[in-house]
Structures are given as C-alpha cells and as structure tokens.
Length: 395
Image 1 (cartoon, rainbow, N blue to C red):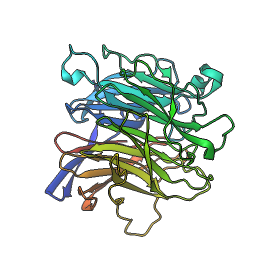
Image 2: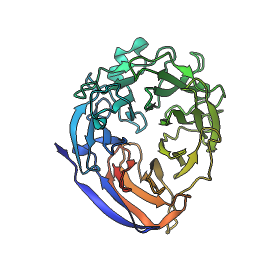
Image 3: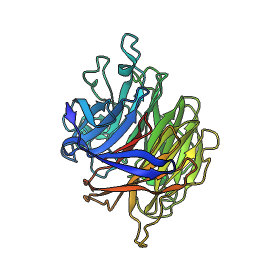
Image 4: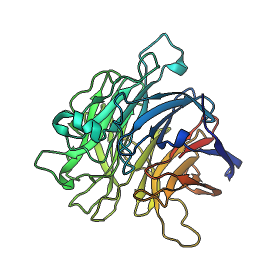
C-alpha cells in the first residue's frame, strides 16, 4: 500500500467550523497530479514520475479521502512516453463507465488517460509528429491497455491536450493544432476533438470543434470536462497572435457541434503557458483560469456558457505583485467552492500552493485560506471535493 503523509488544516467558514481542507504531496516526489472522484467517493490520482523530458505516468486510488493511496500502476507501456517540461503538456484523467456488469459499483468506473507524447514517443509516431496518446484501464483493472495515438489527420500538437468522459460510454480527447499544413502560426490553430462512443475502444477521426478564427495559444494548456452528457472545453486563443483571450466551448450532441463564448480577455504578444480547470457543479460547470498574474473562476452552462461574474481571491494585503498560476477548482455538496493555485512558479522553478474557500455565490470566505510550500518545478496542484463535504489538494 502506498501511503501519503497529509497536512490537515481546519478552516473557519460560513457555517462556523467550515469544511476540512487537506493538503498532500504527490507520492515519491511525483509531479503534475490530476484528481477525480467517482460516485462512491473513491479518489483517483494520476501523476508523473521520472525525467521531465521523458518520464512515465502513474495511477493510484484512495478510499479514505486521500490519506492512503493503493494499487499504483504505470499508465504508459513504452518507457519515457510522457513529458512534464513546461507544466502544460502532462497527463489528464477522466472517469467513464466500465461496461462490465459482473463487478461491484466501486470497481465499475473505467479510468481514461490522455497526454502529449515525449520526444521518444514522437520518434515512433507518423511523420515524427508529437502524438496525443490515450490509454484506458483494462477490464481486469490490473493494468492499462497500450497507449494509442488519436491524432490522424491534423498533427502539430504543442501545448498538450485534455480528456473527458461520461457515464454513457462517450470519451473525448481534445487538443489544438493547425487547421491546415499552411497555417503554421498560432493564429491558424484551432481545437480538435476525437470522439469515442464505445468507452474508448475506438475513436473517430478528429473534427474541428469551432469554426471561429480565434487561433490557439501554441504552448498553453487546455481542459475538457463532462457534466452528465454535456461536453465543455476551455482553451486560450491567439487571434492576431496578441489576443490571448480565454474561450469556453460547449456541446450537447456528443462533440458534433459546439457553442462558444469568450470568458476573459488578455492582450499580450507572447505565449503565457497557462492552464485551466473544470469541475461539475450541480446544474452547471465550474471553470477556473489564469488572467495576467491572477486566477479566477466562474460558473458555466451549456447555453449561456458564462452565468456569473468571475470570482477572484483577495489581493495580497501588502500590495505585492500577483504571480498566481495553474488554478484547480472543486465544489462540495454544500455548494462551497475551493480554488487552489500556485505562486512563484516559473521555468524550472517551483513555488507555493495557495488555496481559498468561497461561498456558493462566489464570495471569498474570510480567513478560509491556506498555504503550503514545496510545489516542485514543472508541477501543478489538483483539488477535489469528497462526499463528506471536505476537500483535498494534492501538489
């Protein structure tokens, strides 16, 4: 059994003794955690270990709220297929259904993983292009199936991609790449989605998600997520290579068509290497993103997309310059929202985990905040809400 030592902080919230927020390091010095919680309360963890230029993805699960993780297994079959350099290109995790009816519900969730391949994987791919790799937990739950490249017709992957799945057997892998071989700048990029309707057994050829010429920030990360059978995608644009606005896409027809809307504006003539987060929240989806040194979150729905004004953590009391990046958002059953992020991160530079609790209507809860030093270089933070109303943040 793999055990994590956890730092526990009880915070004061809007209900007196507010929800518990636990923080924990990734086991054995791992990087870039990704968390998901299934309907039984089982916590699923994906993380990176090894050389940041070419390492491996690992998976483990916890049934005690993250106090201990067990059944660790490597995701990628080929050595060094994953990458951590740049923070944005690592693995993403999604939970779907199993298709097996002879197992208990706690074991019925199928785990899906996607990631941008490393240079080692690139050399094995078609035309030596960076692959968008996908693997799923095998039916016997003892290993992951061999990884597959879902890029067919539109290579040019750079800033990584993301994955989403629902309980009806739909799986979506999303990434951004040029619309055509001639569109080799950021303004010519768009979001592509490869969809599966058979639990990831097969994927259709990728389709452009949206026809609006927004471009896509070449080395910025993106995020996909499902709420029920609705699919959402967050990505950063690069129109005219200076308008690096954040866009949300939403689909109700299993990725065949999308609505789109701008959530936030950012004018800068360089890649900002940003990441974003999505989390289901009742009848809506929560989205969190970076914004000129700050982080923010808002509620989305599939029709209106942005349904509330963006909420932000309080500014530092000493007036110091903000350096907030890599947000992760989660909501508990009481409607309280936890936003976690990093501060002080940079190229080959670690930083600090910071978190803030919010009321259901987006107001920061006074004093309900915390910090933990020691986020390693190239890493991220991941937040999740547990069935008892508490939260866990892994970094």
